[in-house]
Length: 332
Image (cartoon, rainbow, N blue to C red; front, side, top):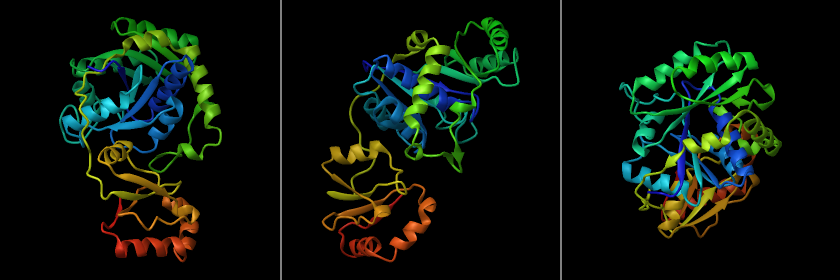
């Protein structure tokens, strides 16, 4: 059993405010001197970058659909290493995943069951009052194995609005541990496939400061911390993928930024060396690497620059590397 305590933040649907609440709690707990870490449920490259900025450490992905039990335990243990509190943000709605089962494969609820996590449910209560209690009742009773331990109300209109909802939820014996008011200033801008990337926000530190203050004013942080339970995982390290070479040239910049940290840490544990380079700044891959890895990202946002570079040294060096390397160029 890990010394770290963990808590899963989920919601009935996407766009209910999970990421905002997660960032606010991470920033507030960190401000109080707690060693916090974050993880993201499922495949996601964008939210974890915000989590890293708020927590001050790497955010790893926990995917019960793509990872076997041993790898899931290993990554969860890595995510929690050295932390007092691990906060895990779900994807989509609590029970949403692949397949047709009552709990979708890879759903946050499945992760909660496998890692024995309690759930902090975020409710977007804009446009409703007592009816919010029906949502809580439905999620708490849908699968009793999934423990809804607390509620955070989001986009609350007034003290009167909050009081009406809390009175209704009080009959369910599930505590409301926070009520965050409507505030357009904390909205994070989006584009296709998710939020605008963290590295594109010049004011990210200021945003996190505001979110921390929001959590301190409107959430019972001590009670929320008390909802977390010890993480029960097998602590043996397991590699996700074998390294594609001894020295791996890794494209790493604003255009090529999507790669899972647990993959890189597994390669390093296997003895591989990761050598970053930046196609976007006309920096070619080192010629002495065994393989060249081009991760995903938003290259279309930099199409003009990349098109110009395609005619000069970077593209030529990548093509040359492909022709002579012992391992081919990989992309994902």
